[in-house]
Length: 478
Ligand SMILES: Cc1ncc(COP(=O)(O)O)c(C=O)c1O
Image (cartoon, rainbow, N blue to C red):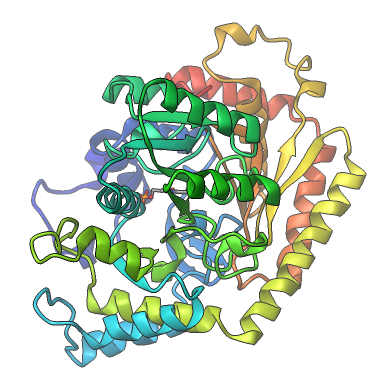
């Protein structure tokens, strides 16, 4: 049905009326008036025959009554499951009792509840907090904090192939080379190192020295979110030593991997003797109901940077610290610190590892590597062995073979009731990120369908994707 037919009138209507609109209207509006490239890309991934009406725990409920197992954890945001009971209870408590949600002039009970839970669960030195709204805001606030802490130095070292956001100041730290050059000039205070590569780290520092720029901070994800690449303990230690030697700070961006997704409350706790000066967390904290980020540092750092009354609000933002978001985040930290939760995550992580190991031993030629840690995991696919199957001149097609094969996986799995994803900049890795509501049966479903995918010949599926890519004139990155 076209949009013209499905919309009777050109007048606004109350929200509840819109709930009954045909799914085509939902897709049409998003493609025509929101972002055609993005939603056409989702069409290519095979998502367009439906819309998601409801979501609970690990399942998405589609308009055709189909149930989809969400193996993305909503990129981390719904790690506690969709609409988790305890978060919904707090939300109701707030709304039904008119508890204070917005106050910029007074501290709130919810804010102090969150501070209490952070102080009692985070490493002792991380005892000062800024509450922001988005991840990128957290990254910007961290860099401001570090530049204010040490005003005599401006140099930043950042891991290449990383992701820290898309605002104008975080984009230069993010790996999209193409966009970086469109929106920002090369930053003379910035140098890149290869994550996990000590020599590259030292070289990047030397490049700053050669330019006469003093090192202010080193920023990295603890585990790179797109590729799920990890680094050795030695690498993290060398990074820390380099910062210490230069009176610089280390900033660990745990927006994607923090808060128990790797089995530890903070992902850097998987490594020995690592003590980042500033840590940023965000995605799962609002339990899928609220956007919230936290920049955790020490009182020493915060006070040196921001202690004077004039400087106290160097960084602030309108929607930071909303009551219900603070309350839900404080519940998250409480639940994440409980023994039962940690045991559960360990058990689920083991179940996932078994699934991925079984698959790799059955398809050693298709699966190069199991990536990630804990419940933040994926499979690095080996597409080279089938790249000849298609008989296409890939130079003429605006999509890499890696994207094509991984898209084929996403599409195949979705058709069979499982949602997965990959990062367009790192298309070799199919992300498989269960949330904590997964059951043994869910893991069985996952294993069975991945087995079917690797066993099947995907030529037809990939040719269909090529057709769609050309039809929608989409260029997939890389
Ligand atoms: C590691 C990391 N840093 C920063 C960000 C930016 O967060 P936001 O999109 O909330 O601004 C993201 C988002 O995906 C991320 O994964």
